[in-house]
Image 1 (cartoon, rainbow, N blue to C red):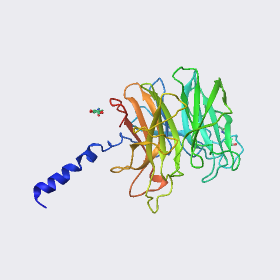
Image 2 (image 1 turned 135 degrees about the vertical axis):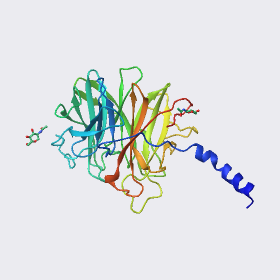
Image 3 (image 1 turned 60 degrees about the vertical axis):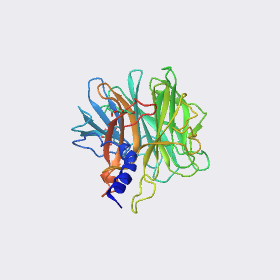
Image 4 (image 1 turned 180 degrees about the vertical axis):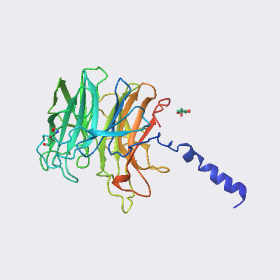
Length: 320
Ligand SMILES: *[C@@H]1O[C@H](CO)[C@@H](O)[C@H](O)[C@H]1NC(C)=O
Ligand SMILES: *[C@@H]1O[C@H](CO)[C@@H](O)[C@H](O)[C@H]1NC(C)=O
């Protein structure tokens, strides 16, 4: 090829490069995490919660670290009497009416016998958590979903609350919650809000309200087995709706009940299989998208690391 042809070919691929994802924000100290949940207390201390060991608690005075492992939410496991109740998965944390609520899952890998439970605390410190037990459960042949990966979103009216959860099986479901002090009850109406008929793997919903929309972030693709590397590894897609209960659509207007979903983060640079995400509002940084990702050369569970990026809301659809 003539040099000019080579240049023209290179330039034609530039739009793809322009859309490249930024590097994750810095992390020093203890950065291992799976399915992180992040919250900043009013005194400025950051709390990061992770899957396993009764939900690990890791704290820092700065989102970039240094992070220190300080204990577990439920070091002796959950009172929910089900296999997996010593490990606990996929925390989500919310601050409502003066206390912290931490949602967790009890399950074992590949099983639909699961429960979503929660614990409450006045300050998130180790030793301060009271296990409140189960909100909802799933079982083979009894529920279409798997009761894991819970996330709470308040309605913009400040009075109503919604819990979304799910993975594999019939994918993402939601119920309205009533919250009264330590008591949390889920409505008996469990509605599916996202589904992809082409793949079984969709989990870890997170809903965040901004600019008049409820933004539904979903971890899709193969989450956990990376040898050999799958064709469709973990990544995060985005849908939105003007109502917390949907209908959710992607940027092209495709229904997220029928495989819609606009990519938000995917494997790039040294970031492999990003997912298990959440969003929180930091008083100085703004809205922060956080996740775990793997080392592309050591694609195993133990290489999972905390990643975060500030969300850019200036266009119609957000980016990092
Ligand atoms: C966990 O179990 C140990 C041994 O039974 C007990 O000493 C400890 O107080 C328990 N911790 C919590 C937080 O319940
Ligand atoms: C935010 O996104 C817009 C495009 O939508 C871009 O022009 C702008 O530079 C971005 N801001 C930052 C801080 O990256």
